[in-house]
Length: 156
Image 1 (cartoon, rainbow, N blue to C red):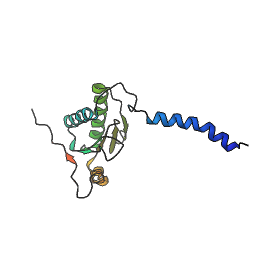
Image 2 (cartoon, rainbow, N blue to C red):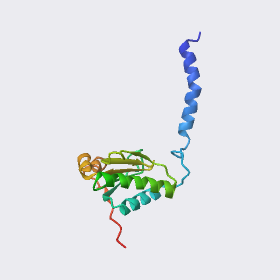
Image 3 (cartoon, helix red, strand yellow):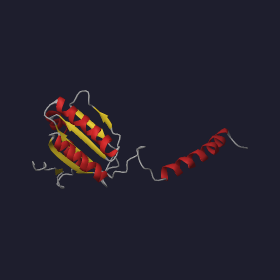
Image 4 (cartoon, rainbow, N blue to C red):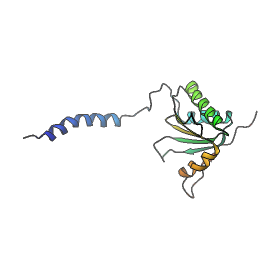
């Protein structure tokens, strides 16, 4: 005699199998039409931040450390207005140049703006807020290699 629990489990099993099959299939990430690699995204992001006069740009390699992305970039703007402007221009540039739609949080206040491209996570801070949260210290192990500071491009 079959119980109601057996019926539920037998009905759920095909759905679970389908979900496992779909999860195992390679995913191309968010539905976008671009084919930009994470390195191409990173290069465009660093160039945009430099052009918009972002300060203290730091790149953290997340490959093999986290599933949230391949790279993290942390930088500062001098004011809330500059932080918001840097973030807005970066999102526009990613969309225009790479066809990459990005998620953005915090643009309204301009203290800390987070931009998520799927492969690269960008944090744009006001200096005081950046000092308070110290994200670089969270991602660089004690005694390990420091996060890579990005040198500004030569004027010219």
